[in-house]
Image 1 (cartoon, rainbow, N blue to C red):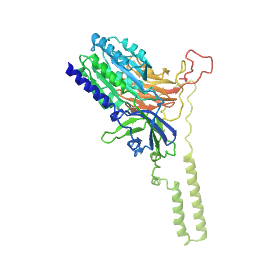
Image 2: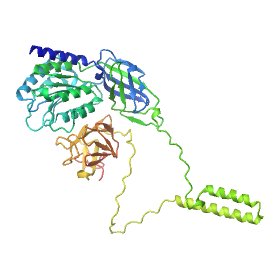
Image 3: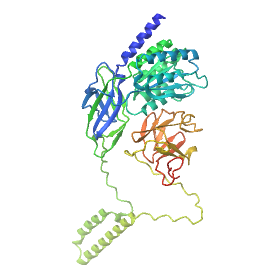
Image 4: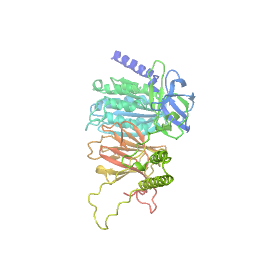
Length: 528
């Protein structure tokens, strides 16, 4: 046993050293002061500070834009967010869970302060994910939430879906470095996502740390190791509650890392185009590149401006209507002129009159073709139109940028989801939370009942910084914005956009203040 503990201690030490690996780079915030001037704040706990030459902004397939400068930030303006996910499923067992709670309480007390240097939240994973505590920096509150854990022996353990939901919750916190710590035996039952899909969701955002704990952890915790490795996080296999507590203590000590401000300058596109979710690229010598997606919209580089289409070839003259072409009139004039010199004057006058008549006829036909078609006759009063085709929905262009969505307030939602197809047709749903979850599981804010094409935790709407975003949580069939599919990604939303999850389609509409007496909802939904 002593030998085993030595091995675990070495593993924990290696994990603490790995906290300085390149995977630790996190984006704290991204600010654009004027188009083409961007300041990205990053957190990095490596043995040496990053260099400006190692950082770049990437806009799609365009050449990377190198950093113009880098400086250390003495006093970070945004907190570090930690979400602690604890497995309380039946496979853990009551005795093992009791020992774990005691070990975790000791790990918290080992931080040596009543106030933590970060904000922590606690989520219990069982049949469903249950929030035991919102974000706080009070040590006693975090310890109290851990003490509430009880074994959940009913149903399945959707571990991977819970991890995906935790990632979305952390992203919704806005600015600040983020960290997810999972303590579980790794056994998953019933999740719609795979370990690879969850790792893909996280690897462009922030690291995930994991501790394998429980009688079955040696068999099932391979998925936790995969997720942690893919995200630049740390994984420790604990053989006892004490080893799990020691690993958590080591993780907590490395949560807060130094912060740096990185500046970028580039010529912005003249047409004021916006690039959604550009990528920060960090390339350290001898290390693989790390890509972090910026949850921000920045001005597109000038080189990204759309090119003017090449001049189209002149259209061929229409067949069967030669006198409609102005070029034909000129050709006819030249041909006749060559003959006029050999004929009397009166013949020339007749030819000139003929040319003028042809020109007038051509002009009249062009004017007539340019007129809009006559409006269809109105339907008969009181009659029924038989087999009337459904009106064509106009195609939408790219999502517009710059609309200010109000923050959700009591009785005043951010937006309204109007059902336009599927079982939700004709219904309206108020987006009245900063994080509004959508899926077929009962714990969602909008439950897609009986939709076999929707996942349990399908997507969420996130209101932040006067913007509204839709995030697909790695659903099996993806989500759709204005007919375009996306998976495991986030898109900005504008008024009138259409969202589709499974078989249900919604139109996103802004709310507006009531003009009459205030109703129970405090807002007036758009008319159906």
